[in-house]
Image 1 (cartoon, rainbow, N blue to C red):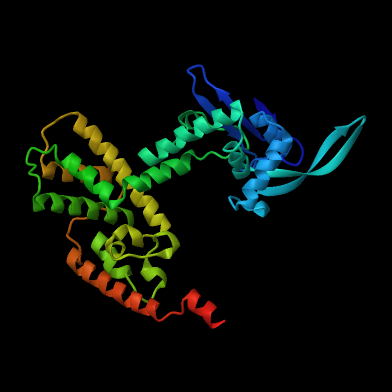
Image 2: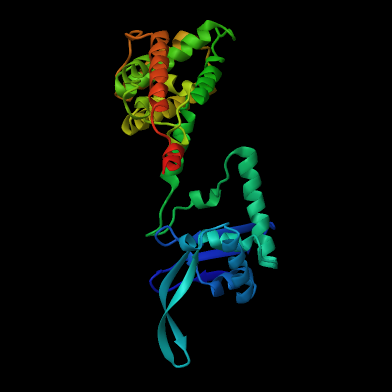
Length: 333
């Protein structure tokens, strides 16, 4: 079933259908990244009556599940009434409101919707992600937003996180003929690779970035990446990646991901490789990429960087402790 909206909304669609293998699919065509339906169209979508939709919307707003002001908008729509074409302002409801109705209606379409949503939510809770593979395999039409590049950038950022990168580097290192698990050599190998990556991206080692940029007098202690709400924890201040600018972070993510792909391709050949061989391969990769090569240990040790960062962290929190909190300001009023 397909529903179109014409008028100032241009053209938007939402489709619920069942595939040949019995799975329910929902597809939306957004215009300017939004989708609005009238109560009549929502009723048609879920195959229920308009009064039923109206009753559910009242419940959604009265229970504060959604705010009416944020989900309702009036659009001028040209309608045919008898022999006349009349322009009227009709209330339309946003995608969150449409989905909320879908969770409440009792109809075959409503059941299909909830089955689809349950599969998506279950996948998200188990795997940490859910994705419409077919949508990303087929680029959208003209005038529609393509989120493929955003998806790639987020994946690159995840792969270059220190924990993920450390594990992947160790996986590659484990194929070395001189690999010995649970030794300092593993950590040293990771530190060497990490520093070469940082140097290639912005001309500093990981320790130098932390030591130079951790500053209690700066907003968020100089960190460019923080937890939600600007929260900073002690472990965050010793992660070099958190101090990088957007441009530096983008370059690092690209280098890390390209090298991982390159190293995995090398590992597929199953040639005997030593730790030194892998470092040589990294240097060759960076040379081909036209990046600067790090040929020294850097001016700042990891321990020096950690001591400096944690000292700045203590000062930063002392400063925050003296700042008036919102609850205190409200109490004084």
